[in-house]
Image (cartoon, rainbow, N blue to C red; front, top):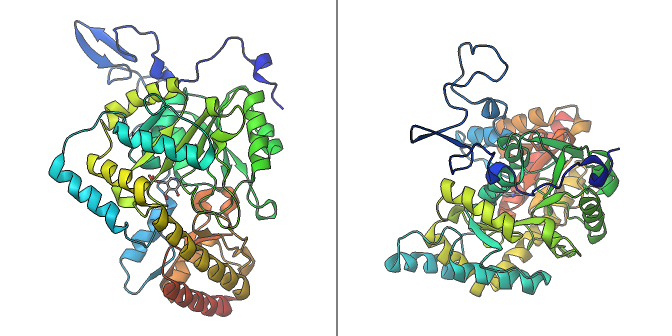
Length: 440
Ligand SMILES: Cc1ncc(COP(=O)(O)O)c(C=O)c1O
C-alpha cells in the first residue's frame, strides 16, 4: 500500500493541473512565441515523442485513439433502425420539461440572445448557492465558487483537464458512467478502476480505495447515486472516502447529478462532509431532476482557485453556457420543486414494479435506491451481456444496455432504465420474461 503523501511527496503540489502553465514563457501557458507568432507546443514539427522520426501518422491523436467508442451508443443506433422497440436503454427522463420552465426559456429569447458572463448568470449562480445551502447546509460563494457548465458532461471534462497532470492517476469505482474514465484519459491521466459488487450494494469501501492508491494518485472520482447500478452511497461510506482523501491529500470529483432521485434513503452531498468542501469538485445539473437533458445545463461548485482555473478552460472551449437554458434553469430552481417531487414519485412507483418484475422473471436485481436504473444479472443464462442485449433487441424488440461498457464489474449484467411509462415497463417485462424462458 502507498504511504500517505507526507511521506511520498517532496514538495507541496498545486491542486490545479497544467492550466497553471508549464514555464515555457511567452505570457500564455503552454504556448511558445517565435517571432511574435504564437504556436502551440506539440505542433507538426514535433517528433512522435519516442525519439525516432514519425512514420505515417494517424490524423487522430494517441489520446483519442486510446478512447473506445461508447458501448451504450451502439445499441441506441441499432434500436433506431427498428420499429416498435420498447426502450429501457437511454438514460433520460421520459417527461417533457415542465411548462413554466419551458416558457421561461422561450420568453428569455425576446429579451436577450447574447452570451452571459463566462461563469454564467450571477442570478443563477446565486440560486444554485441557495439551493445547495437549503438542501445540504453547504455554502458556496456564487461569485467565486460556482461555474455554470454545459451539463455535467462539460463539468467532468473541465474538472479533469484542470486538476490533472499527464501521468496522474484517478481512482474511479466501477461500474460507472462511461464518461468518467474518458474524461480522465482526455487529460492524459490514468483512470484506476476499483470494482464494486452487488453483495456490497455497489458501494466502494475506504479500504478498496486505499489499496489502489499509489504515489501518482491525484484524485477520486465518484458518482452516487450511480449510473448504471442505481446504488446510493451511505453517509458512513462517504465518510470513509473522505478520510482517505484527507489522509492522502486527494481531490474528490463528485458527480451528484442524480441527487434528487433517491428512494427511501437520504442523499449525502460529499462536499458537505466535515472538511471536504475545500477538496471537492461538486458537479450537478438540471438534466435529470427537472427533465431538462436537451437544455444542456449544469454547474460546478468548488474552491475558488479551482473555479478560477476551470473558468479559463470553460472560457476557451465554451465561452458561456446557453443563455436561454440559464433562464430556464433559474425558473426551475424558483418553481420546480413540485415537479421534481411528482416525477420522483412516479419513478419510485416504476422502480418497485421493474425490480420486482426482474426478480420474479429470474434475473437477480439489486434494489437500486437512486437514479432511474436497474442492473439485473444475466450471467447465469449462459449468454454474455452483449449477446443477451442484442438478442433481446432483435427477438423481442426491447432495448437494454449491456453492463460491460460501464466497467469490468458490469460483465454479466444489463442496465435497464425505468424512465419510461409504466405501460411500456410492463410490456417490456412480458417480452423479457418470454425471452428468458426461451433461452433458459
Ligand atoms: C452519472 C451521470 N453523470 C452525468 C451525466 C450527463 O449529464 P448532463 O446532461 O448534465 O451532461 C449523465 C447522463 O446520463 C449521467 O448518467
